[in-house]
Length: 231
Image (tube, rainbow, N blue to C red; front, side):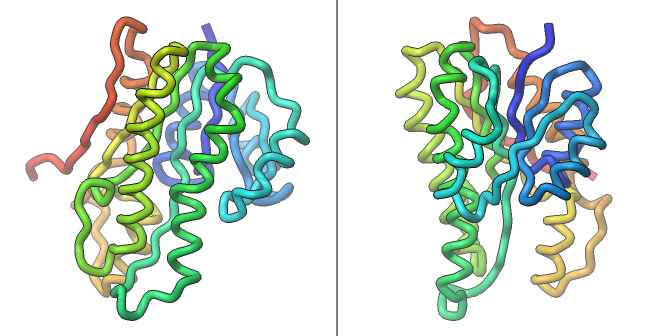
């Protein structure tokens, strides 16, 4: 039976591959897009999908965007796969970088979840946060990004306890370094050569995410860490 699933970050990387896999198996997708032009591109690439035009960097505008989208009353899952990264020492990182990463990586998932929660409860559905290894450990130059991802872990942990009485499952996926456009950007910021074959294939993270989504209702994968395998 097809499910109605909201996916953020469906434009590239893990989110894009996940959306493609879900669409291919017949699930009804709702994706977020920053503009009407981007929404048209995404819905053309993902047959049967529909888009909410919303900029996750401006979470205060999500409520109006969702109201305009006229979404169904039942949503089976939300997968928060969008994210941005901007490395820098605490001594050098401007407040705009902190604000942007916190907005996209933490505040937007919290607000989107809040706004759609009654629909997820109605479906006794699931919320999946695609976090990061940085959500568990912070390294030099990763302060702002790791802070946003540590916050995302806290959000998921609190939400899991709050929503269990409503039958809503909450899962966090912690991928290690994965061969995505974001990883290419990270290597550029680090000044390092980028070899995609050295890192996790996004398909592996997507398979882990689908496993969590498809797990029978008698159980929940609360936290799942995906690390690069031996080479």
